[in-house]
Image 1: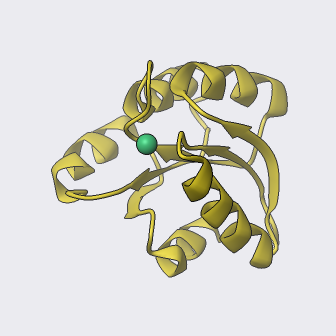
Image 2: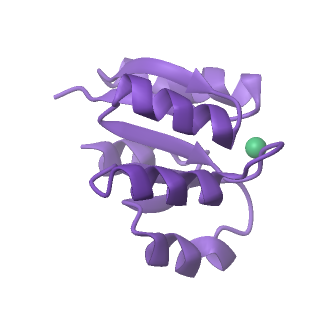
Length: 115
Ligand SMILES: [Mg+2]
């Protein structure tokens, strides 16, 4: 069944790609945030089923935003989408309690984790 997804990603082009892949797979994009602070505000107002979270963004990064969202809602489902060198972030992602960390270009793996 499709999920209501909040996309957090500072690159407009990457947002477009992720949105297309997720909507094609039957998910609904309920919001798009460009940085961590916006992500937290949108999470509180939209209560999405899942958040896809970029790591590197201006202002508050994705790990900090994920941590704050999980402090507000320990049941939050957050999927960290990395770019390069994702392995170095894996321990940090696991310790935060997110549902996973996937390279943002591997759409099949993203979709697997959303189901
Ligand atoms: Mg980024």
